[in-house]
Length: 566
Image (cartoon, rainbow, N blue to C red):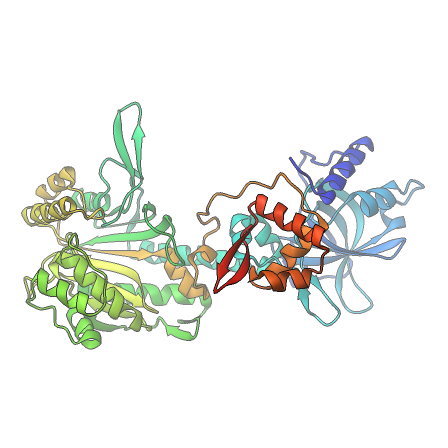
């Protein structure tokens, strides 16, 4: 393992601490009785406090120092006086341990009393200091100059997502996103519980991946010698519980879909699904409006939320538009009564990429997604989906070609999906068989036939309405984050590149830095001019960078271009 200079120094300090008889990782409880926020909220001159956290800054003034300690709720200033901490002749704790062996980022425990500094700052006068954890890597702490300009901020998205533990320390404001996420789950859970519905758990490993049209992850159970699938949805299991006699059940479920990743999709995501007996999709629309209004207020204190350039208002009621009308509004094409081939040709004429594996439902979905979806900014219910798009949904009471389904659109994205649930076992079997035909045509997202679920329906499921909400996407809108990775503690990432086994020379570092300042790409001649190296050093450096696969040279319009790819 290659260590940086700082990492080597910190390990040397670790050894010196042990030589002094100080355990850098003590096992005993440290009796914290205040947080930084509690101290500030209930500040009382002379009050005794015990706090703990990371040391984040030090201003050394010789026999005394000012420092900042960061805990889970913020920062508090410390005042450390050598003679207070070390009242006897032995000043090792201050002179050696604190000043020389404790680094920024280390966890320390403090006992002291509150006082106000000459400039009016709330501060702790430290009486006792204890090292609780020695850190072996320096934190990437941002630096602020006298004019308030911030440098070296830890802002690279890939590094932040990959090392969320560092991101939360050095960018503590980002914790607010995850605090709001928890508030959202709590508010939604309380809303359902108050309505009398039961939170349940259903299997994550399933013999048949049902309840959605998606490509699953597959694994194998050795003892049973059967394939198992990570769940793509929990719908069919929750409906089994309605068959079993529960009036209302819900679950916050981790779902897994083996599909592409982008700013709104992660292969592992959280959905909430709720099913309520004796209700229909009209009731569920009103229920959803009330739910989201309640949740928005719980998270942000208001029904309004800013997302990008838009201000969204989650206050009920929401606009209702049929799927047919939405497509007419934005394409002038009427899907009513059209054959699969007519819809395919219409999609092609709109410049939408389609193929022969797509059935009628998939084609309509593509048209809506490409031409309509992005236009709905304020919360809008898109209702009455064609039957081919909704294999688990009850036939519309007024039109047998449609289903009683709605999706809630916000800022051009779907955040909720709901049905009057199909409870006719014969109709359901026929719908599944249609999905099987799509699968045979090559649609790898078509639904499997779940024979046990069909058996459950044959025992009778009462009229039921169900709702599914993408929780990650909803919190994105409530916290003004356009990327799903921002609202997941640990989003899925590409494998980390192994650390290089080589060290760049100063000349090679110079070339790399010039390329980075020019968006990692520039002409060879310009790069050579800016580097201003001798011919020999230039040739050697460029050869080494290429051999390390850090740069490549291509030709564009007779001009040689150097690209940094490291």
